[in-house]
Amino acid sequence: SMASAMGPRVAAAGYPVVYGSRNPDRASVRELVDGTGPGTRALGQEAAAQAGDLIVLAVQWEVMEQVNGNLGDLTGKVLLDFSGATRPGADGYMESTVATSTSEMIQEWAPGSSVVKTGVPSVYLMADPDFLGEPPTVMLAADDRAAKEAAGQLIYDIGLDPFDAGPLRNARAVDAFGALFWVPLLQGRDQG
Figure 1 (cartoon, rainbow, N blue to C red):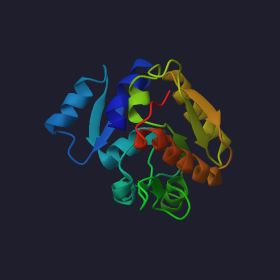
Figure 2 (figure 1 turned 180 degrees about the vertical axis):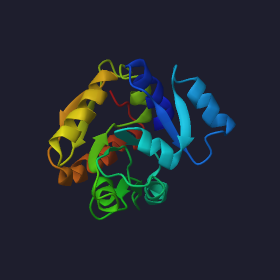
Figure 3 (figure 1 turned 90 degrees about the vertical axis):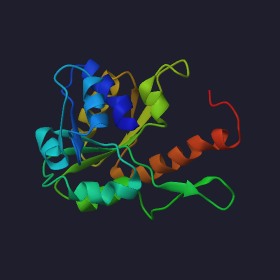
Figure 4 (figure 1 turned 180 degrees about the horizontal axis):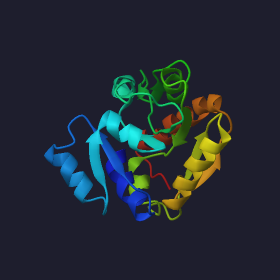
């Protein structure tokens, strides 16, 4: 969902878009490519990761380690982590399923890369940044300043409001904010 919402926005901002897929010839992937913009293409996961400098990790947390292992050498790449590792707790509210943060774990799996935690509250805000009347703030946490600035520029160019959330260890707070985002929804209240 995140990739299909984000891809067209990235292409419209003038960035080349390459989708990575286990099966780039699958009909649903072809539809995604066709609906994104001119010059968009789909490749296998490793070839797609090697084709760019900014890699958007927009897959479910449950498969993140496997996908990361399929991307090859990520040395020098900037990885934008959009994942969240939450599940409903005993009281129905979301709780983390990891001890640190998704981004810190990805950084361990890809030590030569620069991971940027990218806290977009929801896919529907990626698809329509003006849904709540103004663009949502997107928190960015990373240890590499240049990587964070590159991610921030991309976020700004697609119509969202980047916010420097400090070092990568603050990805824990960004992940926690993602769980807080669900509170009004779980209570049946309006978000705005």
